[in-house]
Length: 414
Image (cartoon, one colour):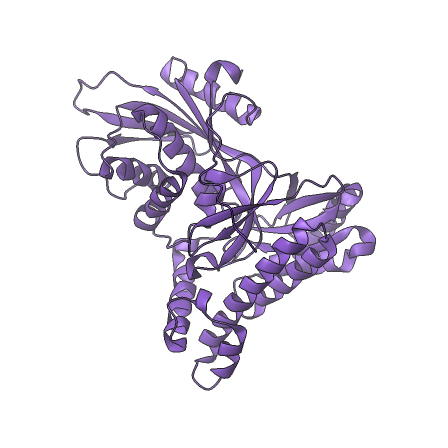
C-alpha cells in the first residue's frame, strides 16, 4: 500500500463553511464577556477512530476520521497590559463557565484549573519555538463531547494552535503543529498519548478517513463518502480519565513487550513473534503485544476494504478489534460491551455492519457502520437496550468525514 502525505497538501485556511452553531455561540460569548468582536475564529474537529486503537504510540497504524463536532477558539488582541497582571492571555470556557489568566512574562507550568492546561501547553509550545503570543482575550466553545473518547482535548489544543498561528503571523508545518499539541498533552495534561488525535484534527478531510503510519507520520486519505453507509457514534456517558494511570500502564506494558521481543517498538513485531515468545512473556504483557500486532494488521486490511467499499469486511474487522481491546488489552467496560453486543444482535439484517469501542477506553463511545436507511431504527434499538441492560442513558449522533483545522472569518460566521 502506497502512502501520499496530506501534510504537504494541506488546504489553506478559509472562511467558507464551518460549524456555524458552535461558531455563533463562541462569538456571542466573546462579545458578552469582552464587549467586542473577535479578530480570529479557529476551528478544529474531534475525531472518531474507525479502527487502530492503542497502536499509535507503538509506531503502528490508525484509521481515524475527523467528525463534524468542533472546538472553536475566538480571540482578539488585549491592549490593556498596563495593570499589575502584565501581559497575559485571558481565557474563558463556555462549557465550564470558568476563566483563567495565563501570564506571558514568565514560563507557563501546569496548574489549576486543569482544563486550562491544554491551552497553557500550546501557548508554551509557541513560546519555545520563538513565536511569542501577544496579550489576548480568548473564549472557548466546543461541541466535541468531553470524556467521550472523541479527542475533545486534541480539538482544543489544535484550535488554540490555529488561533495562535494567526495571532503571531506564523504558519507551522502540519506535522509540527500536531507535535506541538501532543507535547502540550504530555507535559501539561499528563497523558502520554500518540500523535493520532492531533494529526486527525489538523489534517481531517471531508472526503474520507485518514490512514496514518504513526512511525513515519505519513498520512493517506482513504475515500469514504458512500451515502448508503453512515457512521453512528454512541456515547455511553460513562466518563474515562486517561491520566489516572491506566493509560500509562498500558503504554509501559507495550514498551516492555517490545523490549522482550528485541524490537524498537511493537510496530516491528509480528503475530508469529508474539506466539513464539510464549515462554518469555508475562501473560499480561503478552496479551498487550498480541493486541497491538493484530490490530495493526486489522487496520491495514480495513483501509483496503474501506477503499473498495467492502463495508461488510470492514465491519467484521471492527468486531474483531473490539474483542481484542476487551480481552487482550483490557480497556473496554461493561457499558461499551453492551452496545457492541446489541449491535451484533441487530446484525447485517437489521442494518449494522460492524461496531467497536473507540478511543482510549474505560468508557466513552462506540462507533458503528450502519446502513443509512436503518440508522434511526438502529439508534432507537441501541438506546432502548442500553437503558434496559445498564440503567444508563445513551446519546448518539451521525457524522460524515469533516474538514480539519481552519480559520473562519468572523463576519462570515454570523
